[in-house]
Image 1: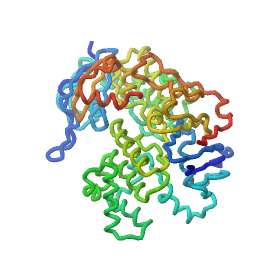
Image 2: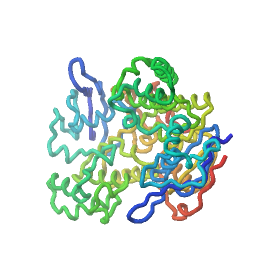
Image 3: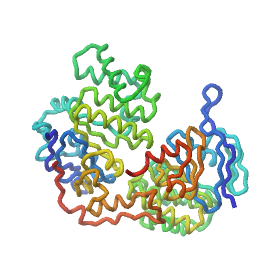
Image 4: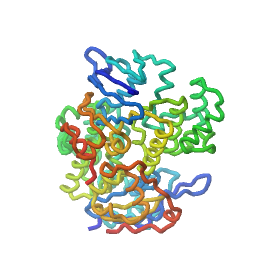
Length: 284
Length: 249
């Protein structure tokens, strides 16, 4: 079943030197799956994620034939209706918990605020729900964390708190924008395992934006590879290492590998034509 | 000859009740021309060792000997900065936003007491593969990789023997990371440099270094060669755990 259907998405920024197209005609669908979007910085992967939630700030312009959430076109909604979609239907986890949590508010109050805003319930119930969610993301001493301020928790725990916060309203789609790149390798695993479990359990759709090819190939079902605002290749995550496009191959070859020591790493030789080739459709 | 010898190094922050022991009894030696890696998760004290060497850590005990000179306290003399230089993790934060590349490099050269600055600036830019057209740019006009090249050029200005590299590529894309690592490989050959490199990425350390130390909670748990790492022969359970977490499926 298709949860999200994006057709011909453009994100434009007018500048003094003319209009800059950050995303250029991207189309893809998302079912109850884990969809990875990879690319270098500036490839438009984060912009794609933000555009879905209409979080591109002015003067940026989002244009698309359709961004349909279960058949409802998000582009037709008013800003007020859109606020009901954000968080409730589609949630987003940002890269760095340090900048995404309110530094002067206790973690518990922030979690409860998210819940109370969308539900007409008592504080006690919001509190119980928040503690449940903290437990769900494997935070052991939830009571203590509820009383803590964001600077009193570690990066990995902060990111798990963010995930808990995003999951409280029980969204259908989770957009994770580099959720683990601020974290250590070992903590990264834990956070991914938690996300993986929750996505499977609740049957959510996940859009996982990352620059880490290995991580995506392991963690996702399907991968879109973006270059200069376009999708250059779509492949099954398990078969990422058999990818055909020279850009994907170049990215894979530029990674140092423990099993193949060599003096120099391959450097990505960019080809003008990659940017001009039409976008590949990412429909399932 | 040993370029860098560290014995029972302790580094701590704060005192009394608030005291945090960031590095506990670390000992290792780096031979001249060798590349030595420090790996571990954040908070394991790997960057703190580099900061202690350069005098940026508040309090330490033990011994640090750089090319035969024993270091004391936080003060470092001129000879030290001629021998040891550091490249920091975040190229976005380590360059002055209102200084051009030219200002950054010529100031450093002047501080090292060098003359003939004009030609030296050009030489440095050529060395790191930037060329003259980047000379009068500001940091915001450069990409992350180009900024890291400027930071490397700045470190090379005093013609040091030892470079301390604190996660030099962790803020960069994989394609740019490959370029910077190749540059570091070239520079090591050209200038006969010794590297002490910190990273959380075992693959990067395995690629660049001859030997490495695995750190956990301030202690060095294992020192091994890169070959041992590649053959998956790490002994300590924590090194194995780290290795498993970073191996490509």
